[in-house]
Length: 348
Image (cartoon, rainbow, N blue to C red; front, side, top):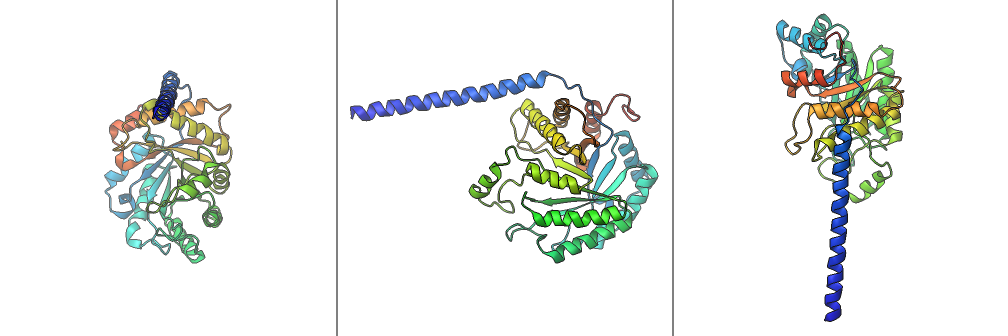
């Protein structure tokens, strides 16, 4: 009995030490990130930026005044690329014409009111993985119909195709095959291919561990994070890569900023010389995330640029997610925290 009590006390003591050690580590992380966050960024933003736009622009009629206001907003905020939601794909790789019945009018209006802005067709769907999902890109017939649908949107006058298939895992050869074929199509037409992907892995070697240990929940089996090799493969195929860096779920603004900074630095180092990069930033406030906001995300992106030895060879900027959650105050914050002073549109 005495030995048992002594063992219990020893176990409790070790547990207490371990808890104290863990608490100390957590405190150091919080303190370190707070100290890091106090240094203001020196890098300014750029004039190459994207915006994800709601489906109503291609699916519903609009007045000339609405188109004029859209053009003014894009010019004032130095938006060079707009991903107008034009899908999603049906299971067979098609998009019903009724969903994009006003696309041609939209494209004409963008040309009138925001010349030089590239209006891209934002297309995607839940990608079938292990029999779960909607669009099965492993089926060559489905991929052919996706390409045929892309041709329809390019014929309408869109400046590019913007894919957002989710989830896409780093062993997805069918997805890369689709990108190869789409690139042939877009380049033959003098248009763009852009892709939206999840933020990269923190540790590439963790992917097979996730795959083995994390059970399927709905359409997702394990975190669909691109590895370094997969991100390079995407960059070699796409003219633009948009990183969906948002939905951070961290408890403090400094940790959120560190997240955006780390992913910006790493992504631009990896592919900034290969393709145009947009770091996705949110204008919505997640219900379960009180620390993530647009100014903090933009500050984090700029700190990530500061950490680079040199600017990337290719253009880079941010992607605003999304137009339907961005109000006038958000746009003012964006201009103040991102656009370079002296920009043609800054402050106007």
